[in-house]
Length: 118
Image 1 (cartoon, helix red, strand yellow):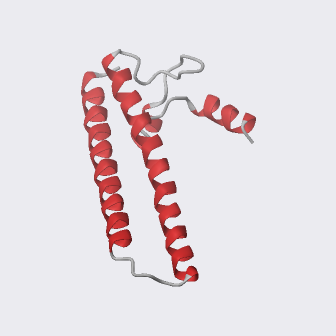
Image 2: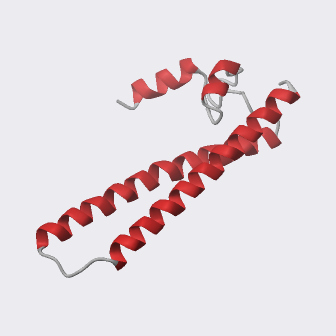
Image 3: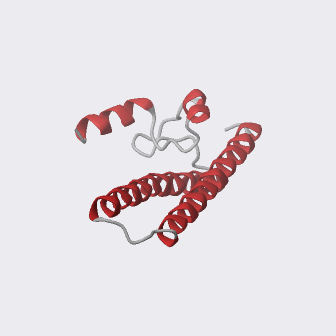
């Protein structure tokens, strides 16, 4: 794979990683502030805040999954495996990698994988 493209993908992945980490830290701070500012309230308010907390946790879980995928992509760059589908070992199109730099599979394998998981 072209070294210039790999370099731009590495930069893109590292930028995404930083944005996700910053977002998770901000969400965590917001959650801490919510909990610290919480006055004794009735059960309805506490339940609503519990839903907010669970929403933040769910968002965090998705972002953590993305972080792992980004780290895996960075590792594949280091091991000269970046851009190869983990299922069929064919090249992942540059357009797909540009749109989703941490893609593990080509479109065909990803589509088949999603169908199996329905």
